[in-house]
Amino acid sequence: MTDKPLTPRGAATRQRILEVATREFARHGIAGARIERIVAAARTNKAQLYGYFGSKQGLFDAIFHGSLERIVNVVPIDATDLADWAVRLYDEYLRRPDLIRLATWARLERRPTGHLVDEADRLDEAKLRAITAAQAEGLVRPGDPFDLMAMVIAMSMAWSPVSNVYAASEGEPEELHDRRRDLLRESVRRVVAPG
Image (cartoon, rainbow, N blue to C red; front, side, top):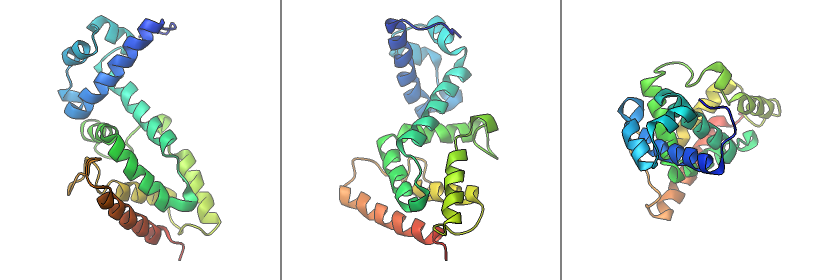
């Protein structure tokens, strides 16, 4: 993998690889993704891909960690209103179903149990501190902050692309999404209510 700064053309090629590979990994998983399809669609070659990412695993890691950071940045937690956070996660899954699919492939193919990422790569420390602070203020029920966070995230995924029951899409009527948002908001409020 190269550590030297990229030229504008090199940066554009790297970005194309990431965009194409995101779709490929989301659709086919880690084992099913094909480097040949990625380089053809990204209009590049294997040497460049491996130069930027080192390996197929390195490419997946770059995409997966980028997707986790996107969720954290685009949908920052507000522990004083976990119900609203759950609804914003629901909306992000509608906008970017590929992100939740990437996490599911990582769960299926890499880490069937335990945390989804290594301790050093976890991005939930700020979330846990926020929940702990909201608990101290009496805004969120007592209990393990991690378990509360996991429950809220799981509830937000009820209609996600990896639901075992029903996968929603942006193309559905807005009133249907509004009903789901209302149900999700009220359900999370009840689960995390302090008393």
